[in-house]
Amino acid sequence: MPDMRSAASSGLRAILLGGLVAGTLDIGAAALISHVSPVLIVHYIASGVLGKASFSAGAPAALFGLVLQWAMSVLIAAIYWRATASVPRLRARWRLGGLLAGLVTYPVMNFIVMPSSAAPVTLHYVIARSRTAKGAEDLCAMLVFGLIVAYFARRLPSRRPGESAAGLAMPAARPGARTTPDLSATSQTRP
Image (cartoon, rainbow, N blue to C red; front, top):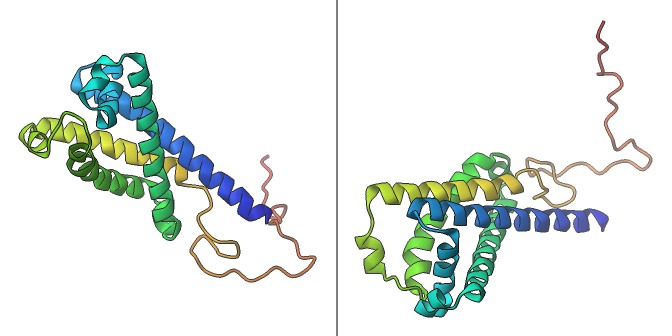
């Protein structure tokens, strides 16, 4: 049971760290891309729930926007974790997994989440404001977001006990057998 508890703890740590770091850096990226303060960005995020009132609600709305950003980011990290748990190769090739996650996250956030929220934006507005340079900047930010999430998930266990990294069943250890590799024969001494 300790292995499962350890794996669950590692998974939770990867999800939380990946989500919180990616979400925080995403606020900074959005501020840089939009040439506005990060505080305005978190107010805008809060407007997804509060509507236009979030812009006049002060610090509580900004804090609410930050919490919403982190919650969405942790949710995205959890979805990535779950999706790659059954594909060990994708988790091992975390750069590819991260880029794919960013490619999926970008249209979901821009064409489903934002227009469906209470934020003062419509799907028509999202499409109308789409400029190649702005779209490329936003996409790059989502690719970096995906890479951060994948980076935190990369080396943590995604397989069930008794499986190898390739997903193959491993033979059970004999009672009393050595469970750690003997590295003494392979160590080299330098002159």
